[in-house]
Every structure is written in structure tokens, then in C-alpha cells.
Length: 159
Image 1 (tube, one colour):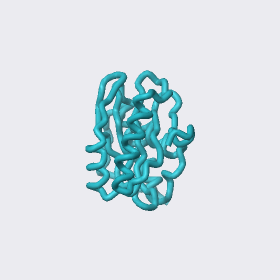
Image 2 (cartoon, helix red, strand yellow):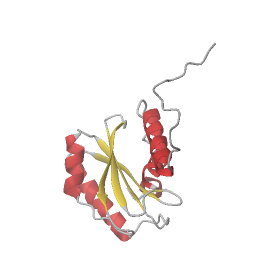
Image 3 (cartoon, helix red, strand yellow):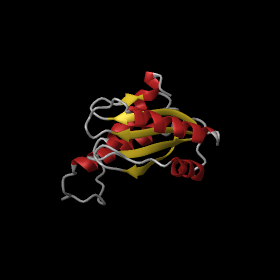
Image 4 (cartoon, helix red, strand yellow):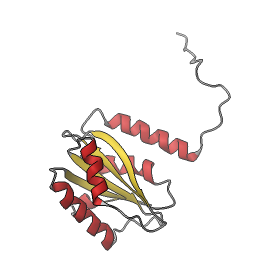
């Protein structure tokens, strides 16, 4: 049997950058998980979010918007901050979830320092978002902090 050659693929393409490789890996993981109830455990969420957020040298706050079966509707990076801080606005999070008719969310942000111990501010904003989203019947399944070792609020009993 002969292998078919895809003639649309450029033969002399530049090597992919590290950023492009991580984006492609996140896309593959996302496609793998969207057909099943994959984002109900912290391990798959941590894996997906590591590929999305580990590349940043400043804090980025993102959400995974899920449907009623906890399947990914969309991953959105909402707030970009400095090396050790990102301001999060609950109103904007609620608007993003409502726009896509989400039923659940997984919150996420990175710590460029690599240390994933949640700060008091991390715990406080998680509680504020949980309360705001509860008003519109949206569940917060987890808050993942990405660094050297990803940390799950749900695994720690903080959600």
C-alpha cells in the first residue's frame, strides 16, 4: 500500500517554535477531550491548561466554558497582567459564560514564578467568581494554577 502525500503541505516549512508546538499540543488535547466527559477530573484539566498557560511570562487568567456534560465549549484568555498579578473582573467572566450559554467553568491562571501555592487574592477571587456565577446557575468545577507543578483548588478542597 502506498502512502499518499499531501501536496498542500509546504515541503520547506520553517521549524515550529516552542510556542507553536505548545499551541498544537493544546489543540490536540482539546480535540481529544471534546468528544467525551473529560474535564471532570483535575488531571485532564491540568494537562490541557499547562499547554495553554505555561508559556506566558506574565499572569494570564483564563476560563474553560463547559456545557451540561462538562464538555469544552470554549477556552478563553480574559485578563493579562504583570509578572505577579492579573486583575480579574467578575462581570466580564459572567458575560463570557452567558455569551456561550455555559453551564460550568474551570477557572485558571498561571504563576510565572513557577510556585503554584494559591495566594489570599487567588482564594478571594475564586470565591467572588463562584458566588457571581452561582447567581446565574453556573457551576465552578475547579480553579487550576499553572506553574512548575499545577495545583487544583478542587483537589485541595478549596472549591
